[in-house]
Image: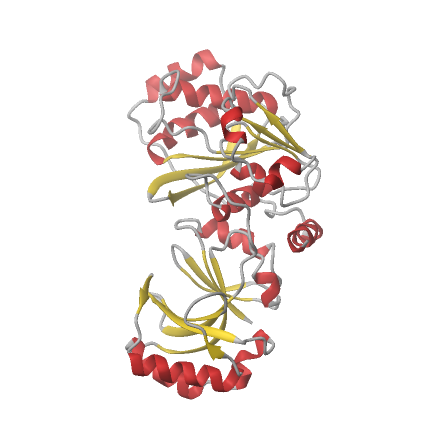
Length: 384
């Protein structure tokens, strides 16, 4: 079956790895900055549970793209009951939408009416101009030669987040990039509104540690799901010291430190990134620890230098947009030994200042989820 999903801009490489661990017999047919078309033998119900998809669709039919109204007329004439078999005849009310080249588009009134009649004739459903019903979308993308007729898959309800929090889709994607395992001790030392802890709580884990100096104010807006989860431990500690976290006791860190753009930091940004990296190096397991860190793109060079100086290996780097703001995501792991003592790292950096840095990116050796058994347990939890 063919599916189409939309996701946060710039996260395409992360999405490929993540989707492949959620669905079976996965094959990409088309991908751009914020959308993917793929084939899979998994059911529409399974695809609808992808936590990082902003919207997910099953493709019912397609036609070579021309003018959107002309293509819509031709599609309407071709539709038959077989095209709707993935919906199992459960269409009672529906509406038609068009989304072309990233924007909502309008169909000519006569074209839209004709399309609605064709859908109604083949499904037995009636047009519902508003309210909860099945949505059918005509979708076109700039570099895709076909116009697709798709059924939007239902999204499960997610807990309401605080204003300005990282979206469910992006936080889920970054958590998955950490290769979650069901025995993980997970830590977000810059917990904020709890986005990463909440996403991690949707999967099996041993312990989930949230820490933020401003815990008292953030806690008032935490969703109940986070408060009730007995695996979650809430700390109000400085991320640069984490006094209650023993050395080498954390399996994975996923976090979004202050960007230095919207808040004051207690020290210069390069010193801040070094302190963060050294704190990570202390609490993460020395040979198996993993991390995913998101920062402002303009501060990425400082974080790269600090993380590598603290002994970490950066496996992949992803430039993304967060609410329109350029950001960089580092996915990496512990390598056991720092490359230099803290006092010598900055001296070395000063000597190399101005020298070009080689940008490298390679895929991690291990899948994002540790085996399909972990994924199936995660999906079972989603279903419950």
